[in-house]
Image (cartoon, rainbow, N blue to C red; front, side, top):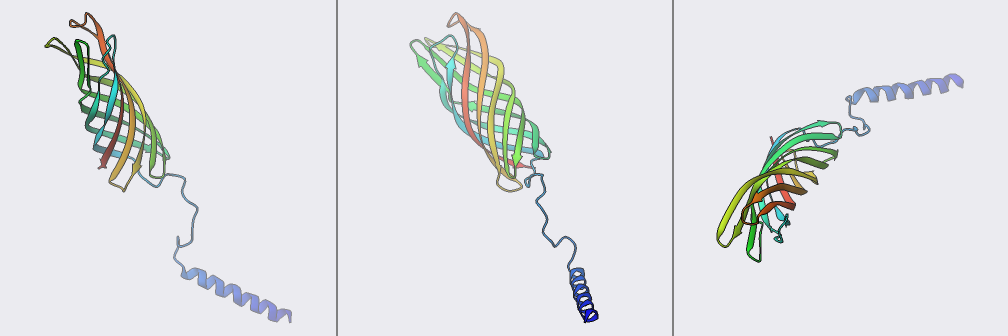
Length: 203
């Protein structure tokens, strides 16, 4: 009786081993890999559009308007952590008139570092860097334009739509530092908030 049981068990084990041998390696399920599914590494370029609002320092004007432009950048990815650099240039309709003065910020750009955390095809990031741009003041038909330097910081979230395209929403604070203006007799600059949406193509 025992011999019969052992013979039957041996036959079942042999059959199972033969069946397992028929399956190719890797066909069984595995635990998900810890690294993100979406690959953020590499160069990209894109366009953006948003709204800018803020104030002129040492002046009652508060320039606001639509702003849009383009950006290029590069990402390095290490597991779920993404680091990179980005530069952009913007054309802006932000301006305001108060009493005799009008101030506008017709263009600006930034050069920033980015650092973030990727969760599958979502990238949550912070950004910090340099800003520069034009400020134009007007008094009684007399225009005075200067180029200002400054700094910028912000946060954003970007989502990978497919391996080639991603979309983002981003907030930036842009501080174009004060310079002396003859039309006001004091130093003026522009401090702005920028909320923008963008799309990028990844090379």
